[in-house]
Amino acid sequence: MKKFAVVLVVLVVAAAAGAWFEPTRSVRGWINGEPFYQDRPASWWGQRLLSQEPAAQVQFPKRLTEGGTASIPVLKNLLAAPEPEVRWQAASLLGKMGPAAAAAFEALVAVLADVDSHVRQVAAIALGDLHPDDPRVVQALVDR
Image (cartoon, rainbow, N blue to C red; front, side, top):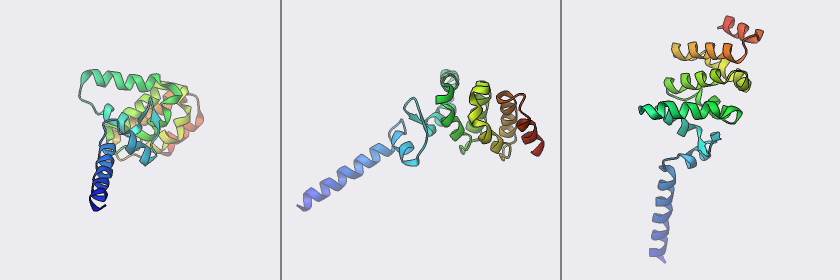
């Protein structure tokens, strides 16, 4: 009986470790309550945006931009990523989506107070691309 308990504990620990370190980050994303797009959590997309591979630098932003409203929750989540490069890329991608990304307005306004000046600059440009004629954009920029 004792041997069975030890084997069971080892199997549970191995399964938990495997789930935690699996490359798609799906288990961690699910546990952390991250939004998903194309069956991948926001943290996975953030890591793809940090890739140094030229093909990935084109492919993954393109996939997020082409996702339309389905990718907006992930991009909004990435606006709070720990890496400034991920934050400014998320803001830029939302801006490229234009008015279709209107649901990200408040999240982009919040990024105008980011500690990184480049992130703030890209967020300001993205806000102009989202709502070029919206007086709330002008007011948000003036307030900052």
